[in-house]
Length: 168
Figure 1 (cartoon, rainbow, N blue to C red):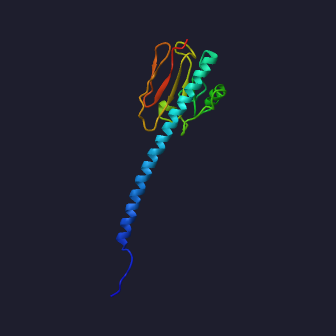
Figure 2 (figure 1 turned 120 degrees about the horizontal axis):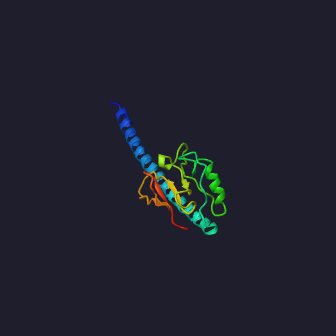
Figure 3 (figure 1 turned 180 degrees about the vertical axis):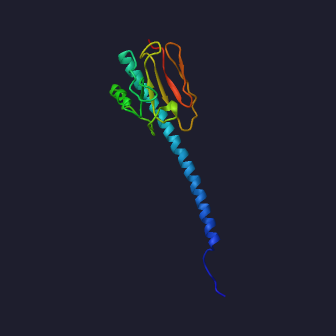
C-alpha cells in the first residue's frame, strides 16, 4: 500500500474558487473606497472653487464671466474642455483651479458626465450670481439648487447644483 501525499483535483478547484470569491469581494470594496475618495475630493474642490469665487467677488464686485464650453452650451465653462482654462487664468491669483478626478469628456454633469461646470451669465443680474454643477459617484448629498436673480431656480437632476445669488 502506497501513501500518497498531495491534494486531489477537486480540493484544488475548491481552494481556487474560494480564493477567487474572496478576491472579487476585495475588489468590490476597493472600488467603493476609490469612488468614496473621489467624491470627497470633489466636495473639497468645490469648496475651494467657491472660496476663490467669493474672494474674486470681494475684489471686483462681480463673479468671473463664464463661457466657451462645448457642453451644455457656450454660456458655460466646463472642466473637460478649454473653457476651463479661461476661468483658471481669471482665478489664478486665488487658486490653481482643480478639475474633476475623472474629468470625462463629451458632455457635462447634467448629462451624466463627471466634470465641473460653472455658469455666471444672464438671468436678471449678470455676474452677480453663479452656479457650480458637479456629479458624485455615490450620491449622499442633497442638492441645494440655485435661484438666479430673476427668480429662476436651477437644480439639475443627478447632480449637485450650488452657487451664490443675490449679491448686488
